[in-house]
Amino acid sequence: MQKTEKIQVDTLTEITRTENRGESIERWVANVSVAIIACILVFFLLEGVFRATGVGELPEQQYRFVKHSTHNPFLIFGPNINKTVQQEQGGATYWNAQGFRTQENIPFEKEPDEYRIIALGGSSTETTYNQANEHYCGELNKNFENNTIVGKKLRCLNAAKAGYSTAQTLIRLQFDLLAFQPDMITVMNNINDLNVNFFPNHGNRTNYAEKYLAEVFADSPEFTNMPLLRKSRVLIAGYRGVRQVQRTLRKWIRMEEKGEPLIVFTNETIPLRLKEQFRRNLKSIVAVGKTHNIMVVLMTEPFLADQKKFEIGFGHEDYNKEILYPELPEFTRMLEEYNQVIEDVATEENVPFIDMYTFMGQNQSYFIDSAHYTKEGEEQFGKIYSERLKNTVTNTLKNIENKKSRGNNKGDNNRR
Image 1 (cartoon, rainbow, N blue to C red):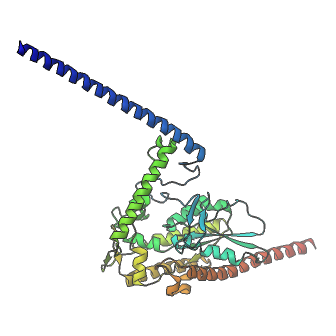
Image 2 (image 1 turned 90 degrees about the vertical axis):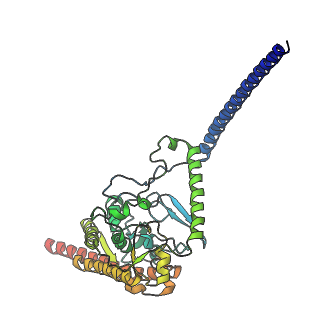
Image 3 (image 1 turned 45 degrees about the horizontal axis):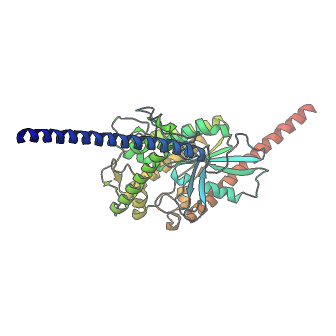
């Protein structure tokens, strides 16, 4: 009897446990369902708020990285678009929707009295390094703000982009900038072309692919391969927030780790296997200019041969794990060899040439690192740039006026 009662009690206990377990699962499912519904409601609520306030919006006009080829890297990254960078010494640097370093949009058609100059190059032309919003193209605009030359107002538009070589400059000029009808372009490319030679040459290619297909340049942009995610402002904002946290953490880690710059030197000879490609790119830029009646001015690139500043400038590039650098004296010799190519092309093509390498010299106060300029350096560069271009523009415009005058006189004589 007692045994039967015990079995009954155990059975009731098991049933009770099963019922309790079932109730717990039901409660858990209900709670999870409520949480999911709440998350969905919050998601859509935030989606509405973000859309109303513009949070998470992807600009319509935005150049993007394009991994379009495993061979030709030249269209992988474009200029800064609709971007603002706050400067430590006050103010902000702007890039407009056309990739120019200015806040206003530039009309394709010029005013009759405008002489339009476009400055092309890499980070030493685009530059925000001095944190004072100074760049030599902007210095020219300041210097000629209230002056005219042979009835023309000089205006310089900075279309440079950090990381650009002659290859990207050529493509940018051909496909983006001709529409703006420049009267003159100035070109200062050297270092970004030069250091392509330091990358391993796996494919025996001559188009700079070994450098510009590296992950730092050819990395996929946000949501390129996730088109559905681009529709949600919440996911875009969340993704950007996570990426910002990642970048901040990496920056802290680098600050902790980078007591010494990550730069590896070699005493072995590095052949300048792409020097002729550099020469051809320069000649092609000049040819495009001549074809469209644009004055092309070639400039050598300044460089401070100081070991500490060299390591500051080059020691923390993301691609330094892949390359070896020549020692500073050899690097300087190579850079001077590339500068000589620039001068040779200018002579061969009979275009104006400015030897900024010589003009800027080795004045420490002009350089933040080996390749970028202080506020004082930008002002000095801008002064030289302005004076040289003033002479070139003056002579060019006077020659045009003289030709017109001779043409008119010839017409008058014919009529007589």
